[in-house]
Amino acid sequence: MTRPAHPIRFAVVGAGSWGTALAQLLARNGHTVRLWSYEEDVVRSIQETGENQKYLPGIQLSPDLLVSSRMEDVIPGARIVLSVSPSQHVRQVMRDAVRLMDADAIVVSASKGIEVGTLERMDQVLLSLLPPGGEDRLVVLSGPSFAAEVARMMPTAVVAAGTSVQACNEVQLVFNTPTFRVYTIRDVVGVELGGALKNVVALAAGVVAGLEFGHNALAALITRGLAEMTRLGVAMGAEAATFYGLAGLGDLVLTCTGDLSRNRTVGARLARGETLEAILADMQAVAEGVRTTPAVHALARKYGVEMPIVDQVYAILEEGKAPLDAFQELMLREPRQES
Image 1 (cartoon, rainbow, N blue to C red):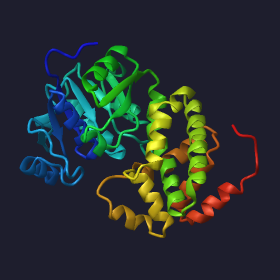
Image 2: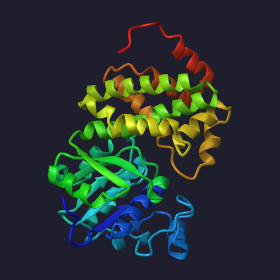
Image 3: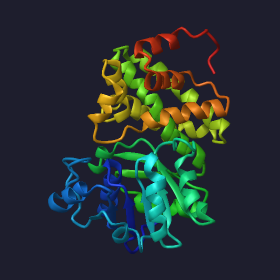
């Protein structure tokens, strides 16, 4: 597969760490990239210093990257539009973006989470906003990828999922670089759920770290967390194999073990005695697992799937349960055969 002969115009909607890193990746790849930010201080920072000092400090951005807080400056004429807002804001933000999009534009969803209230995945949220036939122009980008490492051109591999082979191949082609490898897959449901559910397990992994339970406990948690993710995914129509790939196991391991993981950090600080309110007030970026946990808890009940790790994370976040008590309860569950 050869690279496009001419640069493609991109619109990146959301200038957090991940949106900025993807915009930088594409600009370095020779494409025309326009970045939208809701926050005027982020726009000023990039325009005046060439750096997103709030969400991606220390990374000098391409001078060809244009940033604006006006959708009208960013969306029209884009061949590919990236949705990279926090999951709970995707519907509101992209409703405005869709009105300005070209009819044949491809939409790439790069947000990870479940919408609270509707319990919809991000692909479902976007499809509800796109005109009929939008599934042929929607691709989900997910996988183990810390924004700072992508921006620093450190080797990364992700997946592009969609029902349209043509759209997936186009996204694969324009994103691929010597340090950013994109695989394609058809299982949109599995990829979406892998990206959302791993954040809940990462909160639990942070608790393990904060309680200093060691590597044995972390390995067990990751393994059993993957089993829970797979059970719910299959119940919701995903393919089990997807959870053993980059969008499942790969992203899960990264988020549960990496020091750059916001969700792991929240769990560790909770285990050390800080309140959730104080932790979130101290963080610039969004820890998606905090909002995703109640939604996943509700989905598990809706589909009749047993998810004991999710139950305990929910109890810590929503009911004030002590992290130590939560993990003791997990360990004292009735012995059973592994499945």
